[in-house]
Amino acid sequence: MTKKIEAIFREERLNDVKEALHKIGIVGMNVVDVRGHGRQGGIVLSGRSGSYKIDMLPRVQLNIILSDHNVDPTITAICDAAQTGEIGDGVIFVYPVEEVIRIRTGERDHAALMYADDIDSREAALP
Image (cartoon, rainbow, N blue to C red; front, side):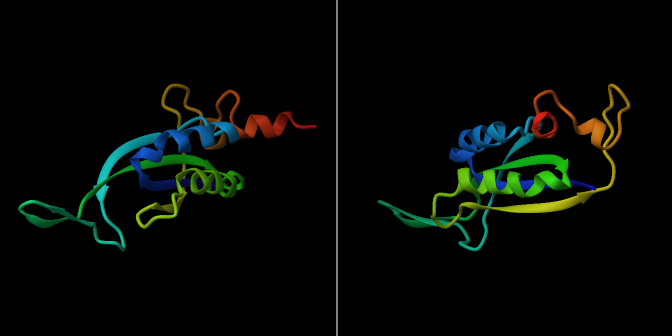
């Protein structure tokens, strides 16, 4: 089975997360700038004219499609790199993916997910 990891976290942690994923062999990913809030409901800022609430905070959404056996190490890498210990660090969702098709080659499922030097090719090269 194939899974989709959707991680939403602080935009300033993006480079750390990308580096952590690259280290474990995650090659393919998409990143989207998003705005939103979770449990904290936003932040309150104070200025000369009073205080005001910003309830839609900037975040990034990282999407990765990968094999089931790569989900846990990927989640660990994202959490370790994105965590600051403060409210608003983010959230990760994991979804099942029914099918993957590479448009250029017509490859399907696991073959469509393979990249040179990715996490699966690294595991296959181990003795």
